[in-house]
Length: 124
Image (cartoon, rainbow, N blue to C red; front, side, top):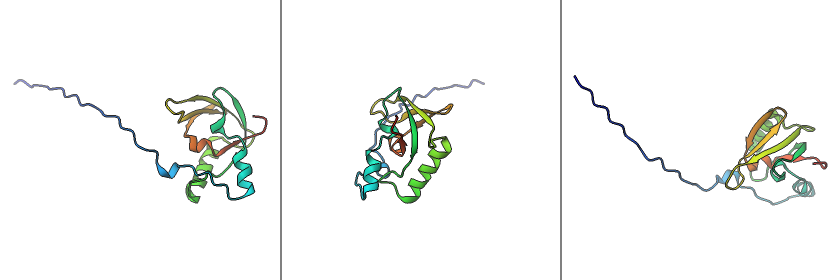
């Protein structure tokens, strides 16, 4: 009895889709507090190889209440707490999203929308 084997190769197509609208950022400051928060430096704005000190976490405009609070909770659990040192290790190509960030002894990949929630101190 003879068994014949055939190998089949399939082409994998890579497609690009528009960003999820749930992550779209809307810059519409409602109050003076929002304006002050928007003017502060964020982790998303930190250049590659630079270190910064986390001043706190903030809500990201464009996310609903439950999603925004879940994001803040996740970032806090990862170690992005006030006073923690963080460093942008690399930005992926193309577009610089996601961002590789080191906080404490761990390295994480954050989307730009997630990195906008991490506020940096004035000394960063």
